[in-house]
Length: 378
View 1: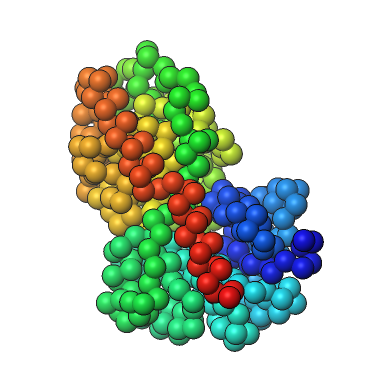
View 2: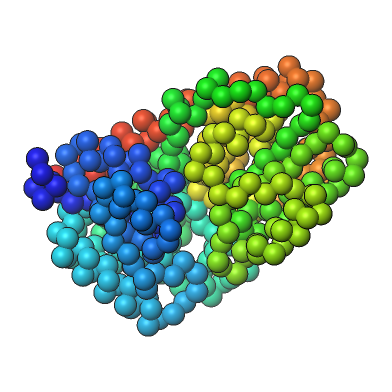
């Protein structure tokens, strides 16, 4: 069947990078199931990669991840309506707050089935932002009312939406994270990390909300006490108000506090060369992709006792949960790991792999999405 005859399914996120790193396996499964996936997002350098792979990519230049510009947002809504109508979209999968809200409004207006996925409640629902959270709650409540289902990545976000009466229990559906390919993310496919030093790794968007500054502070303190440790950082630079600047990362690198690895499209290699993964996020996560990838790679994890993060890590079983925004607790956890016998580290890593296989297998996640799409389109 040619693409022209296949029902078009829109996959909508905030930026093309998000699609490239998180949604391509789902798109491939959607294609194999007899649909034609069409990507929509704000354009970046990854948009070209998607088109080179044969996907249709629709750029939304009015899509701004952060900030409130009513003129831009009205135009964004028009962009969605035009794209959905012109491309004859039969079902829309919507991710990330702003594209989710305006994509939902457009789909609702055009009577197109749509499935929003709540990938975390950071931003409007974080900190003391009463007015913004009220507006966001109303936008969610209004835009999601005609959705087929609403997917939540963790139970706490689901309970929050039900408590605020944003949606009804019969529409709330739990799918834990975006999944990970258990065949590609296997430690045995790669070499062992170095024996002459202990390597810590943090990777993700370079945003302060991910706890990068706490990671660097811990690295600085640990580096003064231990000579055989290395702290590495990987991930793309961000452009919102919480972004870590290139100048700051270069300053840390020049001071030999961290090694910056840049952006990796083959993160398995970076994980395989680390002994432990650190992720001190205070951002209200869905379920961080970096944590389930690290767990699949049999790595112990140090992360915060935060929504989404604690879905992956069990205290003392496959890693350590520390309080948010607590440098000393992070230092203590890192020191605990440094002093830990190798056999105990290996036990934590094996437990990580088991948790990943049981709960975060990409095949299970994709099967659930395909069932939702089939039910909505029918």
